[in-house]
Amino acid sequence: MKTISEMRKNNIKKDFTVDNLMKSNGLYCLVARPKVGKSLLALQLANAIATGTSFLGFRASPSPVLYISTEMNFTQIIDRIDKMKLEFTDDNFRFKEQEVNERKLNLMDLNYEFQTFSNELNGRFVIIDMLSGIDMNNSYDINNYQDMGQYVIPKFRELCKKYNFTILLIHHLNKNNKSLGSTAIDGSVDGIITLKQDQNLKSKILFSYESRDFESFDFAIKRNNNLVFERSEIDSNDLNPNLLIFLNYAIKQKEFSFTISEITSQLNLPIVPSVFGKLLKSNLDNLEKEGLHIEYKRTGTERIYYSKYEEPINEYDE
Image 1 (cartoon, one colour):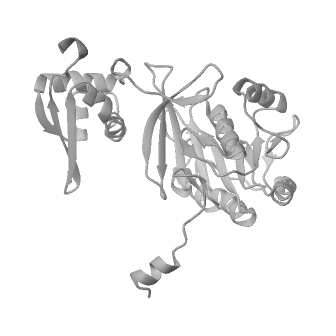
Image 2 (image 1 turned 90 degrees about the vertical axis):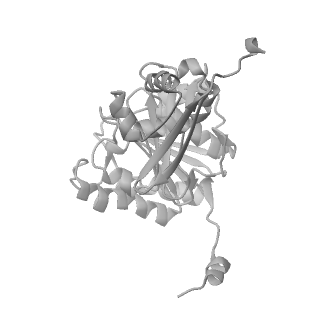
Image 3 (image 1 turned 180 degrees about the vertical axis):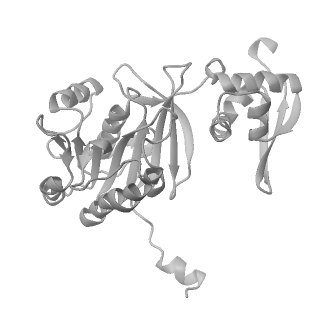
């Protein structure tokens, strides 16, 4: 047994790859539907780590990056790097593509690349784009919880431990906006970044992050003319349609209390309660600009929200 004092004395602050986003030797997943921008965001993250700069406001610890692609060749990667004006050099970036005649990249055959990257460059960050394009020398079902949780994910954990890597796996969302395949993928990694494009606002993408080590959060991003993602301030006209329905209801009610399940059912919102709860929480400041003030507290097993509307003071009112 240890006392509090003993635990504090022996507690060593963990190194990070990206502060408040990725710890060293961690295993992470980036998921999105096709064409949302997974690979572009991954390259942007790789550039931040390779140059020791910031990624969407998060400080990155410098390390060479190994980018393994099962979908893009070096010509496509170079086109994107040049378009995004990324600052990769021979000393901070390596790329491994799938050969034309290969059906999948074999993870075991990549040991030479891993060893070279670790020994010669002291590289510590690896991106695997895509998870579904990697072969493990063993038949497995990506939809099988046991296969993914007890065989596939542990293989990547072994690489993290053996080479002191932090690994980011890029993967698809299914049509229900869940990670394609078994839920073991989400449950076995240290953190997951989800990109979801707003169906009504194509220029806006929700960056959602969940982790066992850092605080979870959501914010909006959009691509600039160079295909680089930037944080996006959402103005009231860009509020998600579900929030607009809720806002109009709240204006009529003036003051009321509710739970997320109650309000999604009452307003017949085409969104599951858990997702609407995150959406509401990430837009409290935007709703407040429109005069809607929301507070909440947990009571038993439920979180009760208190909503109060006050007419906002605009410049033309002064």
